Structures are given as C-alpha cells and as structure tokens.
Length: 274
Image 1 (spheres, rainbow, N blue to C red):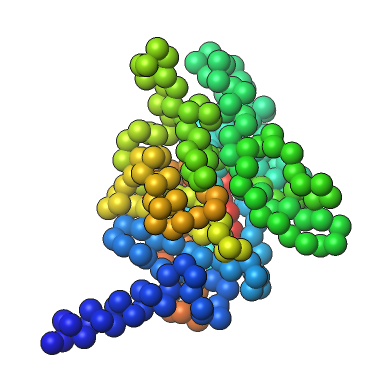
Image 2 (image 1 turned 60 degrees about the vertical axis):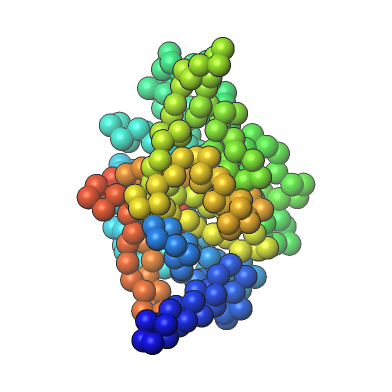
C-alpha cells in the first residue's frame, strides 16, 4: 500500500514538471528518467539572462557558476584540452571573443584540412536582438544569415545539429569514404555522456545525460526529437566535459551533475543563466 501511494505521488510530481508545465516559475529542473537531467527556461517569463562565459584558460562549470552567482550553468563549446585554445566561436555582448581561426594547431592540422570549412560552420546557439529590443533565440549553422533587422548579442558554437535532423556528417563529426568510416570525432558513434540545448514553444531546454543514460549522437538526436519533441536542438561538448550546475534555492535544489562522476574536465566556454 505504501509503495503504491509513493508511486502515485511520484507520477503526479513527474507530470507537473514535464515539458508544457503550468508552473509559474521561469526556471524548472527535472529528471524524466534515470541518467537524464533537464532545465527548462521559459523565455516568456524571462526574469533571467542567458550569457556565455569564456575562460582565459580552462575552468570547471561549477566553479565558474558559483563565482558568477549563476542560477544554472552548462558546458558549451569545443576546445583543445592541452593548449586551451578554442575550436568553437563564442560571442559575448556582440563581440566575438573566441575564434577558431586563431587556433594555429587546428588550422594547421593536416587531418582536419579537408573538412575545415565544415568544422568552422558547425551549429551554434544564438541570442538575437533587434532595434525594438525584441529577443529571438536560434539554433543554426555559424555561417547562416541572421534575420533582417537583428544582430547577434550572444552565441556559442559546438554541434552537431540534432533536431530537426542530425548533422554529424555535414559538420565533419562522422566522415565516410567509399562506405568506410575514416573520421569519428567527439565519440559520435559511441555511447557517451552528452550535453546540449533545444528550443520548443518559447522554452529553452538544457539537457545532460550521464553515464547511466549514455548516448551516441544519433541516440541523443532521437531522444530530443521523439521524447522531448523539440523544434530545434544541438549538442554541446560531451564526455568528461559534460557538466550541469543548478542552484534554485526556492526549490531547495543546489547540485552539480557531471557526465562522469569520477572525472570532471575543466572547460573553455560555459553557458550561464542568471
């Protein structure tokens, strides 16, 4: 009897915080199943600010979130863990602060040269603003033109695109020649912890899956498309870089969820929510 009552209570709690929730809060955290963790940001109740952070070297997500008094933080773009140089574009307050063209190791990499155009055009999350002050959120290739009248005020690149279709081939994460696999970046075809971002009906979703729910890019794409039913979505850096920090005192939530509990990698760029 007690187990049945607890089960009913958990089901009720779960349905109250599913995507499409009717709670008054602008920021909600929930876990739809084991190993999957989601923060939903309702932009129509936007009493928060979303802004990238770029580390001069490399820093852990939790440390950056705490020192910047952020409500939520998640790892973002790709980087070279040895040199701390960026592999992803980052824009903060309208200024490009991270540019892969300045990464000499990347630009001189003979193995990457045949695909460098695709690598530089990987998917990014953008926050756009027009002269009337209207904000627009977009997930698109780096070189895609922005809507007329808008400017990019914040952006962070990673990839690949996950929804509406998987872009792992177009973005040079997976390259095949004559039917044979010749390139396999970011463990694209292996089950790994993943982090990413998606948009649906004015709600932005920050998603992390840890080792208990590790996914390939295809699996991550299927989850975002079929289970979360997002309109658009992309991956951030994954594996040991995957880290999600949540500090919502009004909900008695203060935790950091890492893709690997035993290994937490300092990262180059982080998306902060204030």
